[in-house]
Length: 87
Image: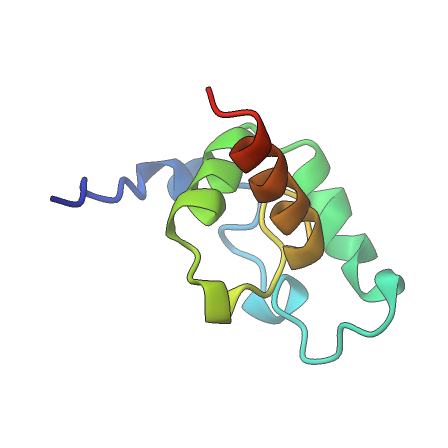
């Protein structure tokens, strides 16, 4: 049975009132496209909640956008580390 997804942390996120396109850009070929989103995420009080949400619920084929200041490739590295060193 799947545990329910808790979205309450989102209300306290720095990005709550910002345009979604800042965190889910169409063109991700340049690292510079992520700079503004990284600045927003860097001081966010719920950054760890955001990261856990992405790591737990992001579908393999839908891994895109910025979560917790991390790109899909960066989150994939965390997933790989967790697989190698389970808790």
